[in-house]
Image 1 (cartoon, one colour):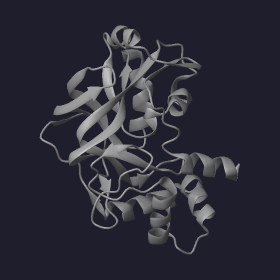
Image 2 (tube, one colour; image 1 turned 60 degrees about the vertical axis):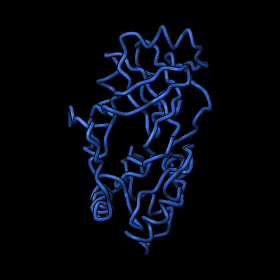
Image 3 (cartoon, helix red, strand yellow; image 1 turned 90 degrees about the vertical axis):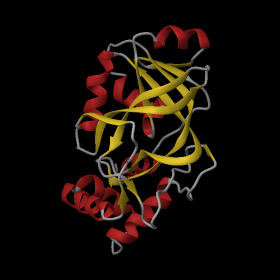
Length: 241
């Protein structure tokens, strides 16, 4: 069990494909341009910033549901980056959040969600009050199949970006051009939070206690929030908390 907890916590954001794909219940296949055009219709473009880019995570959230397929289209987002949020999840990871980063172009995914998917996605993202659901207008996203978006929906961190050394920390696992700050992987950022919040614990015990002890997890969140930067963009419109 301990190994499973560590693997889940330290595996974030989980394997990220290099191409667009479709999740259809328990099956995953590469998405074609024709499928992209067909499946986008009537869907909500929700920007995946961290683990929601991974087929593994989408399967965890939706494979038990009898709903329509979920197309996940790779994209390039201009003037933003995916950085660590100032909170720890219930499964022990330090999760990501979108953050303005002038001149950076980060590669993420758009999850084209049907209305039937939204309640489940809200349940997984809004349940612990770590994120709010928001629209983001006046931006530039170019998808793998050539669609340009100036508005997208996303889950915005309520805690803001974690800034342990005065600046946000991008996720090393997520590709980007012209990054403004040093990127770290999950183990590296966990090591920083470990040293800051619970240095007397063995590293593995630190991770597992984030999962098993809600009070301790919340204490760590509070310490992380003391070193954070709120999301600020004129196009942000919070829709649901």
